Length: 212
Image 1 (cartoon, rainbow, N blue to C red):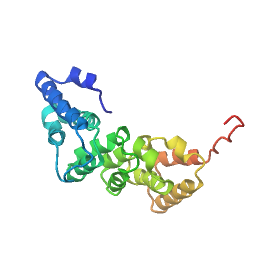
Image 2: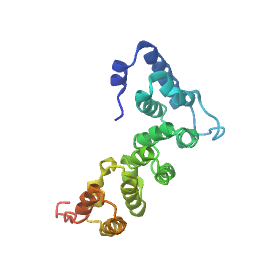
Image 3: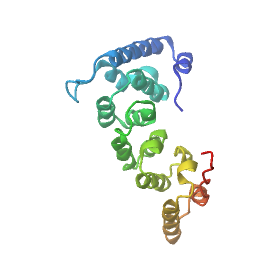
């Protein structure tokens, strides 16, 4: 779970706090600059170097939270977000995915989520099915994201708004039953999460009232 700045300040030592202060100041400065005519998609502002170094200065356990704060403070535009994802380690990519829903990117960062869902890295898959995916993946891609979680062993509790999006989804139900049948035929256990998701698909959405 991502930690707030207040929580980080309480847990980091003085040296790490000073580094974080400087990093966030650089990120905030970048957010106030004119980025409408960025020179090159390969030009990295200083705060992006801080992003990569977060684990070294604040500890691996705090790196996701620090990186997320940097992205938010910088109001990271799509070129920065894409660059950090494409050039980053798995941990750096995960932090991008965890923060997408808190950035003003609309659906433009969807290719990053789709890329993460093509991997078999469970850390990336779990981060990719968060609030941003719930808001921006189309039904077909979202259903396959749910199946990807089941296939890779990522708990469906990671899927944001699962109960809302799965509700009454007959196509998702068909996909889940097919997946369960394949597992059974192969003599493999059917994940308990699958039954939970399947039960959601069998609940019909509430009919709109006259007031709505």
